[in-house]
Amino acid sequence: MDLNYTAEDVAFRKQVRTWLEQNMPRQIQNLDERKAWHRKLYEGGYLGMGWPREYGGQGARPMEQAIVADEMARAGAPAPTNSLGVGIVGPTIVVHGTDAQKRRYLRKILTAEEMWCQLYSEPNAGSDLAALRTAAEDKGDHFLVNGQKIWTSGGALADWGLLLARTDPAVAKHKGISCFLMNMRQPGVDVRPLKQITGSSEFCEVFMTNARVEKENQIGRLGEGWGIAQTTLGYERGGRALARITTYASQYKNLLNAARRLKRNGRPILDDAVTRQKLGRIWADLEVERYGALRTLTMLERGEHPGAGGSLTKLSYSEFEKRFMELAEEILGPYGQLTEGVPAEYRLEVDTAVGDHGTWAYAFLWSRAGTIYAGSSEIQKNVIGERILGLPKESRADRVGGTR
Ligand SMILES: Cc1cc2nc3c(=O)[nH]c(=O)nc-3n(C[C@H](O)[C@H](O)[C@H](O)COP(=O)(O)OP(=O)(O)OC[C@H]3O[C@@H](n4cnc5c(N)ncnc54)[C@H](O)[C@@H]3O)c2cc1C
View (tube, rainbow, N blue to C red):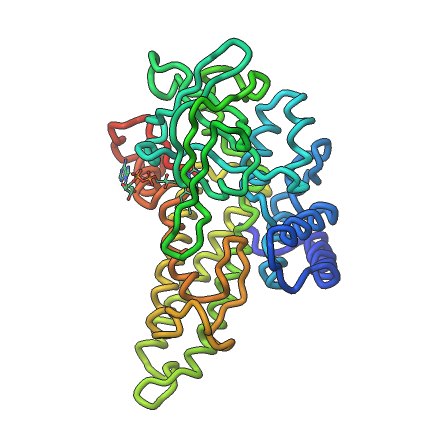
């Protein structure tokens, strides 16, 4: 593990910090303003940085991407939008798309002129994604799509979706799946937002009834969808590794300040020995997360693939976040549960583009998501058991481990 930044990295960090000071909006009120900020980041060279230059990226190193995300977290910069477009769809098109698809779609992802969602999970196909049942029927010059997706993040805002659908029900389940780019703005696509525990409606159900996908919007060959979905797309990988820690650390500082102010039995909560021990434990855990992030970044910088090791990092940070937020709730009492009218000293200064409203209550509820998306904790443990520890395999060999 390399714990030192090169002189080049230090200079780059300074450049990013100065750019943010000069360009960062203090507050984002609506989607148009978020798109404008997204475009500004792109024009500044700070978005889609890992993409190849010919498609609008910078061909940047993982460390440069991590430094930008880290400086944004440090400055409390608003998040850009179209994260699935930039993080998953764009890289998929770069790797598997035709030249025409690259010309047609990539730039508009980076400018947020076209918003994207990921249409993988279904009511009975999450961890076991290969069980998906949405069908795409070949009609000569186009495909006709029928079925239902669920947990579609950003579905209500999306102009396009990256779709996995079954094109051959007769072969083994993971061999009959293909990948498409589907226009979300057509009569056969019905998007229904789901109200979440947080109060916002970022997720959607998507119903497709004779929806149309043009042949030119098939990605890769028929039946190759499973492989495409499995491709670990490295352009943005590890990019948020450091930023995540910086955000936790600034939240931790907020929590310490609150613990100094709030009283229990007439004394500041911070004077309570048990609370101090718990806070100390969280800080120690946070340092473990920091070294985990640096280890991942070191590997990526060397051109190595974290492979199943990515499951260790994911399991570790998502479970840590839950523990951290549970302690915050314990310390903050009612201030940890209020979503409105929270005094400034008991608020959080974060903006993740999913509308966390700066409250601990939102951050606590959102922390439950991390152990589900992109492969639940149980799935990560299966991967660690099988691929790192060499334990006997689960019988369902074609299980994927989730999306997003
Ligand atoms: C915040 C968030 C955003 C998301 N965004 C998207 C998106 O944009 N697009 C999209 O397509 N999907 C998205 N998802 C869906 C996500 O990929 C699935 O929720 C995830 O894969 C789990 O699938 P499931 O919800 O169907 O749960 P299930 O697979 O039904 O799992 C239920 C429970 O059983 C456990 N389990 C399942 N299989 C096994 C096994 N083999 N061994 C041990 N335990 C097991 C799981 O760990 C879990 O606890 C999102 C989810 C979240 C939380």
